[in-house]
Image (cartoon, rainbow, N blue to C red; front, side):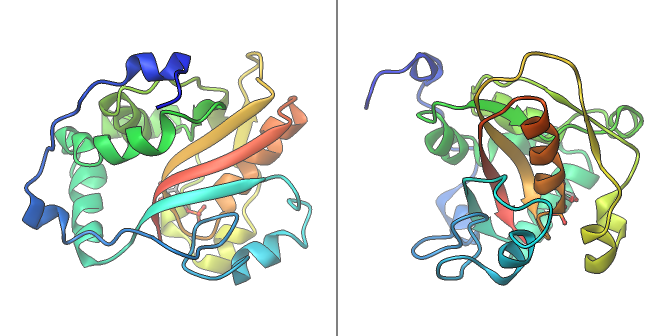
Amino acid sequence: MQASWRSLFMNDLNEAVCTKCKAEFESITGNACLYCGALEDGVCRDCLYWEQTEYAGLITKGQCLYRYNAAMQTYFHQYKFLQDVILSEVFAKEVQHALAKVEAVIVPIPMNPKKLKERTFAQVDAMLESARLPYKHLLTKNEDVQGKKTKTERMASAPLFQWNGEAVPKKVILVDDLYTTGTTMRHAAKVLKSAGAEEIELFCLIRG
Ligand SMILES: O=P(O)(O)OC[C@H]1O[C@@H](O)[C@H](O)[C@@H]1O
C-alpha cells in the first residue's frame, strides 16, 4: 500500500456482520457510469442529462459501492430511519478500503440541523467514523427533504446547500449514503466549485 497521511488512520477493522448476511448485498463491479457508478457503460442517462445543464463538468468521476437491492433497502431503513447507529459499522471495511488512499479531502453531505436533532446522528458522518476516515464539513443543508419528492421534483429542486465559509481545498470527494437522481451531489458540487474547489469526485455507499 502506498503510504499517505490517511493510511495512518487505517487499522484492521473487524467484520460487523456474518459472511452469509454480507452476501445478500450486491456490489457494483465491472463497467459502471464514469460519474455516478450506475451499472451502465460510459456515462448513464441521468448523468448525460446533468452534463447538459448548468451542472455540467462539476464532477470529475464517481463511485458507488452497492446496488439498492432488497437487502440494502432493509439495511438502509434500519440504519437511517430506525436510527440503529451501530449499523454504521456494517460497511466500514469497504468504505475504508475505497477511500483510504484517495488524496482528496472527504466532504460529507450534511444534514439539516433540525433533521439532525430529530434523527440524533448524521448517518454519513457515522459511516466515515466507523471506517476511521477523517472528514471536513464545508456545506450546510437547508430544510428541503429529497426522500419525499418524485424524480422530476428532485431534479428541479431549489439550491439545497450553502457553503459554510471554511477554507475549501482544491481536491474534494463528496460522500453520501445513497445516490438516486444525482441532484444532491450536483447541488453540493456547484456550491463547492463556486467556493474554490477545483476537482470534485463523488462517492456513495449505494446507487439507487
Ligand atoms: O439527490 P438524490 O440523488 O436524488 O437523492 C439522494 C439523497 O436523498 C437522500 O435520501 C439521501 O440520503 C441522499 O442524500
